[in-house]
Image 1 (cartoon, rainbow, N blue to C red):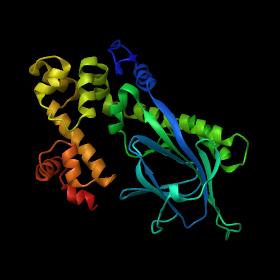
Image 2 (tube, rainbow, N blue to C red; image 1 turned 90 degrees about the vertical axis):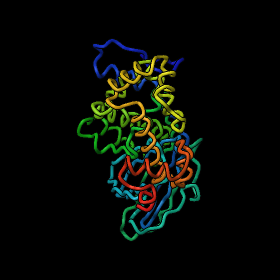
Image 3 (cartoon, one colour; image 1 turned 180 degrees about the horizontal axis):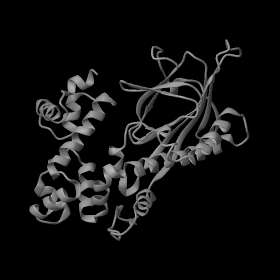
Image 4 (cartoon, one colour; image 1 turned 180 degrees about the vertical axis):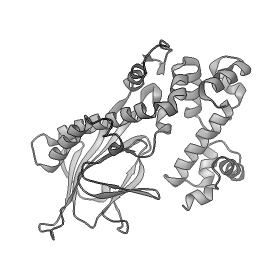
Amino acid sequence: MFDQESGIFTAADSGASSSEWINELLLGMRLSGLSYRRVQVAPPFGIRFDTDASCAQFHFVAQGPVILRLGAEEQILETGDAVLLPRGGQHCLLSSPEVKSRDIEQIDALPLCDDFSCVNECPDTLDGTPPVRLFSGCMQFDLGGMQPLLTLMPAVMHVGTLLSRYPEMLPMLEAMAREASLERAGAAGILSRLADVVAASIVRGWVECGCADIGGWIEALRDPRLGKVIAAVHREPGRDWTVAAMAAEMGSSRSVFAERFRCSLGISPLGYVTQLRMRLATQWIAEKQLSIDQVAWRLGYGSQAAFSRAFKRSTGQTPGKLRHG
């Protein structure tokens, strides 16, 4: 069960079903809207979002299509598509790949109510091309004691990949399309609440579909002693972690800790630390455009050269090659 005071999961009955531990997993999740925008634009357009890493960004396409660009990756979002970027980051919504983007914060918006505004950049007469209508929300994304799970989530979580398994999400998306397209009283409040529900449903769907891949990690977090170690490593990935230091966090001998860790996660403790660091390094270099020196320092490497050797050994490419695509 989830302990709200300690922020960890205590051991549950070994016979608990997967749905029970998923309920426990999501119990501590909190999505709170920081700002929402209803956007109507005519092609050509390009809108850039610089969402802080501590926040999630949600986009719903009421009328598309639109191109989502994150780093070097692009995907087309059609009418009715919704995506959640759980770690935020800089990304763009474009009418076509060659269009330059503008910062959403620099585009004039009409405030409708607290934390909700409307962007309308459609000319009075269009050439027959229908406008693109979007609803976007920046949210504080808190997973409680399961916050380390955030680092395992994909950069973009697409609701389209979940609809076949969760058809009950379709009416929510249809309701969002109606609210985003019509000038109805109370639309801002309805849209923000629907966005919270859809975003939570996307996370739940990913957990349920991906539990086979992260099951060992989840089970380890549910062990209060191992969970304490994992949380500490995710909280301070740049610390000089040794097996002895991690065993001390757990309160056991090195041999007992190492065996328990490997049995639960299928990897050695130091191997896990390296994997985490390389995931973070990839994210910071490719998505956040941090310098290689900055990344090396954050992750506890004594020099850029030492970090580069570790990165190439783990990923097969140099940090410089990753930076330049």
